[in-house]
Image (cartoon, rainbow, N blue to C red; front, top):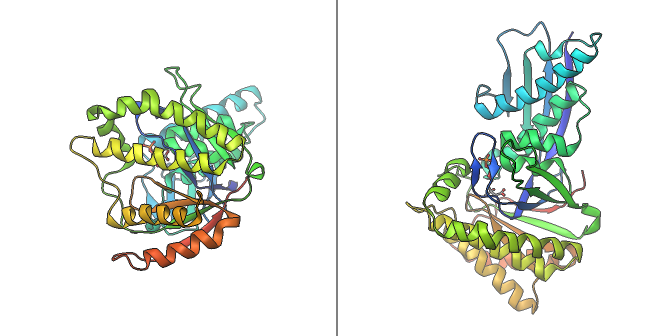
Length: 346
Ligand code: DP6
């Protein structure tokens, strides 16, 4: 017999960034963060988990058609947590098949090119956790799954929920209170849109995992960020979302991205994720807002040069049209992959 379960998980893009770990094994962060989950129709990971006593050669993972590392500590941590929960069910009910003892096969595919330079680990580990939980028929809530996905990749814990999602840093050493919760469903503010500007499809120079550790170890500015900048941004952001106040949402989004990239520049040796085209995109957002006479667009950048622009549906013409116009004149700009995405509740 082959036991099987298939699921999907969406991509999320943070508006208050996770950057820094207090525990690198458990992926426990130095600050809380907040993200918006994007539409699965556009960006998602699709994962099938299966297990069978007839599988030989141990656990395996196929990522976008290629054999991937399954022995990594993070993947193994997720497998271990999920197997332990399944084993507990099997111990309580001996009639259940002993799935926890069988090799696992994971097959995962993104519906967007990994080369798009978008963080795929968030959707990937969220889908991995949910697929195995479904396979094992675990009575696990999204919050519980977020605890497991977090150990695969920190940002993945936020992809277990739709809409507007906070990852509460928690303060326990075992990480049992470091999980995601939904601040608001997508239907609370359904006009929100995200525009992905692919500045470069090249793989990033410094991975988030190692970049954030270098920042924690060497940046003085980072101390200020986690002590006061992020707590303030989290509070303003949650209020902005509750009140559907786009100007406030946008200001915090841009300030937090700037603060995160400033701590990268303050890292020694410095880390630069943005390039000239990224900076041109920032200027373009400023021009679009100035022309509209109010804030209609907000930029944010993760650990790479690509921009994500948040805006409201009613301002689509003002934002998307102007971007093409302004950036068209910028050398090095490729309008090859520009997608306008909705937010999602699933
Ligand atoms: C800049 O979640 O990829 O996108 O926990 O080491 O896997 P690991 O890091 P990861 O870092 C994401 C960093 C970020 C900000 C964010 O998504 O909050």
